[in-house]
Image (cartoon, rainbow, N blue to C red; front, top):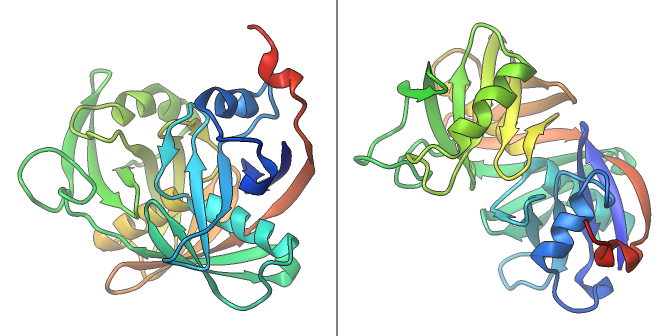
Length: 281
C-alpha cells in the first residue's frame, strides 16, 4: 500500500491513492495507519483521487477513529499539493468534490501554498445540525464539565461550535472539547474551537477536532471561527487565524463565503508493510 504524508501547519494527513490499495480501505486499517505508536501516525487519511461526475476530482476524508469527515480545509490543501506532486494539476484552479460539497482549489508557489474556496458558512440549526427549533445558533449557552460557555454554531460543510473566550489554552480545549463534541444537541457530534479575538484582523483559536482530538491546526475550524468573528461584528473581512501550528489567511465575504490560503509541506512517501496490519495489541 503506497502512501504519501504531508502536513499543513502541523495538521498531518496520509494520502492514499485508491489505485495503490488492494481492496477496500477498512476501519481497522485506518485506525492502524493513523496510530502514533503502532502505525505511521496522522490526524487522518485522505483517499483520492476518486472518479466523480460533480468535479475534477473526488475525495473521501477519514478521522483517526475510522469515522468519515465531510470536509477538511487542511486536508483539501494537502490533497491539492498531492495532485500537484503527481502532475495531475498545475497552477490553474480545479474542483474537488467531498461529502461536504464541492470546492475550488488552486496551488501557488511551486506547491508550497494552496488557496481553497471553502464555500458558504451557515449558522442555521437545521443545516449544522443543532437540535431544537429552526434558528441561527448565535450566542447560546452550553454547560460542559460544570462550566458554562457562550457559543455560536456554524457549518462549512461540517459542524462547528465556536466559543468566544478572553483567553484560550490547550488545557481548556482538551478538558472541555471532548464533552462539547459529544453533547446531545449536536446529533452528528461537532468540532470545537475556543476563540480569542485579538483585533479587527486577527483571532486566536485552540481546536478540539471531532474524531481526532486536540489538533495543532484546522482549515475548516479556522474558517468557521473567522466567520463567527465577522458575524458577531468583531472582525473585518480579511482575518488571520492564529493556531498552535501556525497561521491561515481567511477572507469572509459579506455573504459569508470563505476563501482560505495556507502552506503545505511534504513529509514522506513510501510503502506500508503488511506486518503493520497483522500485529496484535
